[in-house]
Amino acid sequence: MKDVWTVKYGEHTIRVVNTWTNEKLFVDGVLQDEQVGLHFSSRLFGKVKNEADEYEEIKVSVGSCFCTMQCRIFVGDSLIYTTELQTGG
Image (spheres, one colour):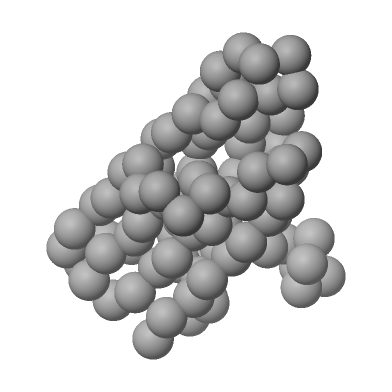
């Protein structure tokens, strides 16, 4: 099993990769956080520069829900991606 979620944020690309044994957060191809091992839910953290050239916090929540994986990506306090909206859940 492998799930990949990719989101554009300004000029940046945020990518989350989930497998049976780990979760990884990449920004513009650079690994920013990783959780190793089998988890039913996990959090990943990183940073991205905004249009004002300031760093904003990235928070990612990955978890299982009824045999499917769910992903939520926040930049600052704003939800910028959720699998629930993508799948109509």
